[in-house]
Image (tube, rainbow, N blue to C red; front, side):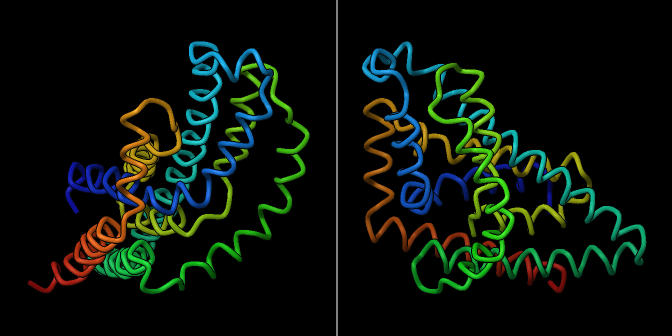
Length: 227
């Protein structure tokens, strides 16, 4: 897959996945904001550094995970015959993209099983996150965001599987960074435009279109090597 196309696609997956992000992480964002000092909650200029710290650290965690998965995929390509490895990884990534599309469209929730597996890892990190609350400084918000980035999420896991076929650690990191940026309009949850976008992505038609587009992209990724 062309690197530029992959990065743009990852951004769109994060954006189209806003329905899932709002449902899964919207409550977390609300809890984090509610835990801030009252003088911060009621003042947008004071609140902004905290929200940027939360989300910047969350995206950093995604990026680090993408670097790891991209590196694993590159190592697998070196151990196996390069062409065969790339073909297998691209097909696997395409299958996960189809599963992701079905997940976003609300037609199949098999990726929930991945979230349950990740829940075991999260159980080890969750106590650390609790010790960082309530948040009093942007630095503390950044540390909490680093932990939040490892929250079990089928959407994130699907993109991580995709990153295995990226070709290198750097490209895997870029893929997850772009995905993280795509999730920002919904999770930042500030400004009238972000609110209208979140409301739009909750509509059934938006879910159908986003899920269908992602699934179609996955099918194309599977079929392309044979065309």
